Length: 268
Image (cartoon, rainbow, N blue to C red; front, side, top):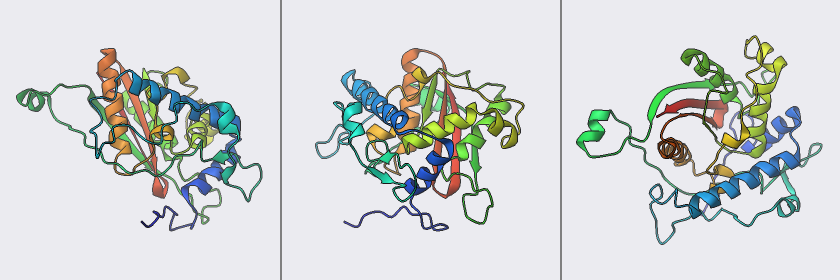
């Protein structure tokens, strides 16, 4: 089979090479990336072991579990992997262990009214409250190009303002792990007073999140990233997490090719 190409047509660079530039800009360390990757694998492994994913995954050709998952991974094992992105620059930190592989998959999400669900005897797991999109100019024509995968950084403040919320007003955070460095750069931007004032036009930084609420069932670093399924997987995981908890609010943040990003709020 032909290996999928994911180079950006405007730059000729892959997502990984773009993410390496962002990691360097924000000073994201190898250790922090490996720690995030390890958490993702541990959380996804626990979700499988607890049966959380039993009704979210449809077995196919005998497969009922993501093959990318490494439940026995350790920081020592991750530290032995060689960098694969940004290797021509200074201090490369991105490896196969803290970057998301391209995998195959598909997803389906049912979105409807209470009445529609009741008529079909379907449980309502969560409510889709609001969403926001954004895009950034990551091309060389911009004298100060943005990171390819940083658009959600801009979308979230608009979403929060429209709903009268702060970044801390959530019980779950589902941030797509395209790369560990991209997740950490996103969090760093929201915590930066300078960035939030100069780039986002805010009076102060959005602030840190409670990291114990981040991707609590694992995410793309462990599950892989099938382009046709990641969004649906994240929505389904958050909706069930809210239903299991009984109530609450969750924030979704997903970056995409072309400098795009989409964020959303789910509640129960």
